[in-house]
Structure formats: structure tokens, C-alpha cells
Length: 106
Image (tube, helix red, strand yellow):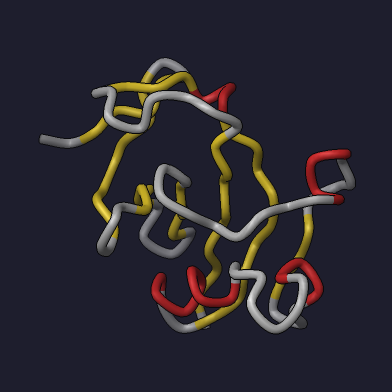
């Protein structure tokens, strides 16, 4: 079992080469087998995803009351690998964090 952290974007240009980390909110950790499963468990399909038993929600905030499904531009951190991945239209692309900026890896 691995742990993945979901960081949802509060807005911004997801096509930019770098984004300020302050534009993202750390929402929850998910215990599961893969990044694909973490993405699936962070969707509001049959129920509110923060209520899944594999999800540990970060301290309450107004944002979490209406937390949306994880989508394009959001970040998934693989704690085991200590790597960050941005959700793309199809799949994920690795990004890095430097000087409070999320930078796309060319």
C-alpha cells in the first residue's frame, strides 16, 4: 500500500511552465496501490470522495466542504517515490517543486 497526497489547484494557467505552489490546496492523503487508483478514489462519482475509508482529510477548511473531484491541473504527490505528478487530459506528467514554484519537466 502506498500513500498519495492530493493537491487541488485554486485556479491558474495549467499550460504555464511554472505555477506558484500557493495556488494549490493540500486536501487529503489516500492509501492505495497506484496513482491511477488515487485518482479514481478522488472522484465524486457515487459519493463524496473525502468520505472514502482510504482517505485521510487534512484539517478542515472551507474549501474542503465543497471539494471537487480531482481534475486536469491538480497535483498528486507519490509519498513513496517523493515525486509530484500533474493530472493531464490523459494520464499524468511529472513536475518538480523549486522555490515555491511547480515546474513542468520538459
